[in-house]
Length: 482
Image 1: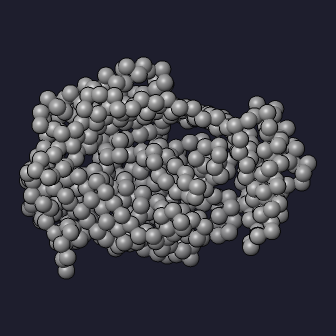
Image 2: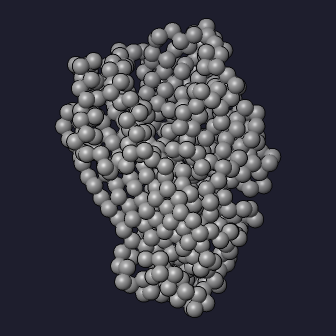
């Protein structure tokens, strides 16, 4: 394969292209879902192909195929598209300079998830479901999910880089749905949207403790049916990492993608309120807010060796002491903004071009014990696990709902719960209201395998870590409060 790839790149150099790269992806995926003690779905899929990107006179062409006997013809098709694109070129595309790399990277794992029998995986989910039903016999629906992915990829370009990688992902979760008298409530573990995922082997699933948490999940779903509605008003909130992961994703990660900032990405979930002249100046949050993009973070779902520009994974300070410092860049967007490419260009497989994608965007831990955060709240709520969300096209005005709110009164959790909590805000106002982040021992990393972006749509696998954090006077509830 290597000899053939190098032949195709040499063939394109003979055609006097400015730059070309070739990516080969072989992706194996397994997804298992159970519902009400029955197998809901069980699938194993493979995808194997290659994509060729050609740059000529500031225009780009891309072509992809699964026919490896036609690689030169596919290269010529990409070249023809680049030539045709010159006819409508407004501004020539430039690529920021990068190092030449020859390397191999593999996800460190203990147990290859594809060596574990499907029966073992099904038994785990059924055991968790049975535990939920034993704890809450009136539960309406129980559900479990496991997912595994192994990707072998090659990146090579006309500059001389040749990089191979083997990336392995594992994860899963459970949830329980309670229904009575027109009311429906859900509790999930360890997170909603099918659980938690990581670049890791089956050992990650083994350590999730799905069965150990099943009874609590089902009981809380039932208890929410008769719980009071969460009050409306302005309250102090302590937010769990299971919810902060999506808050960071939507109100920090996406706004700091340079293609959105430049207006290249608008059709799928909008642009950004950030501009590059804000770097080093704009107060995105309070001085306690330190957020990094870290593609080297162990087990992060956005962890890899090299991105699809062939640039090494790196840890980037995005917001430091509340001030926005960096944005996420690819080679082409970095050249436009006169910034450095920082290894965040990724494609959803062989048939898509790389675009700017989040890696692991995380809030760094602070200095507070969790009891101290809660102890500083006279009356408020501890919010856990996302239920739903919406955010405007420039990533400013948002609304998030969580599965449950635990009451905090006089600095202590009272044991009382509320249903249907939601909070709203303006992105910089919200992050500026943070006056406490818990210590590193409370920090948790969540992986999201379904971040959508681009036209045609692409799915990226990203990670977010945080410890619980406290936010002051946040608007809570559905009533119109002043």
